[in-house]
Length: 332
Image (cartoon, rainbow, N blue to C red):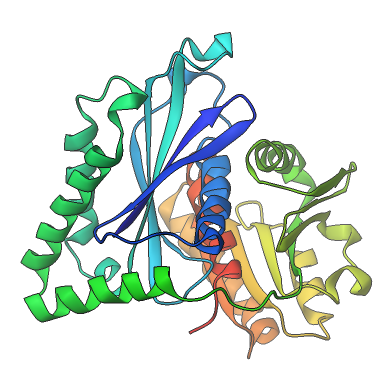
């Protein structure tokens, strides 16, 4: 396991430290990957909080890891005293996030997530100050994680996974790639939600350029360009450079005609991710999703595809996070 600690500072979330179970030095290119990954996670996990009283400690994930197909990431949110925070609304507290990278194989074991949650909730139960979340504390979490791995796998498998992680951390930086274009397409009824997500991205991502309009927005980081656009305004010029498209789809209200239209007009083969709203009624939800997906099949054949559904704004945060990381991650 590799752990990164983020905490809120006056200019946004900052990567405080990185810890692994081996004594290795982290190349700046590796640090940059986790800084970017943690910033996106931070922005979406804490998006929509009106006050710190809304906060709850929670384990999120697993999510795809944007820089390797062999790993997944989990995130754990917590709150702790931090007198260095100047924002009076925070009442001398900070919002902390622990980002954990683990081999994908672990996430497929039935009891793993539950065991990881137990470790984190137990360890953070008595944490009062951010200074207590130091390298020694994070190393203890890794030790407990390693015990869980040994209980769930045999020794040979555990050693193999540990070496797999270290090999990733120590690999040489790859050649610089072109800017990856990601399109985020939304219907009229989700404009307010998208405004909030845009704002959360702006407060968390290490961006280089940004622009915002009523029906379209853009955020450019060092390696990625996130392009937000209202579905009725999406055209061939917008789609052409996109490596991936994330659709927010209002299946709950049966408003998805524009999604079909856009997919039908595709002349390229981008990765397609759908974050689908469903009615809270289970029977209606399954019926609505089945109807939408039946119509969708003829438009997505042969395209890399991901879908997730939500019934509340709370669910939407984690599903959107899964979708974005899936679009950023390499295909197996």
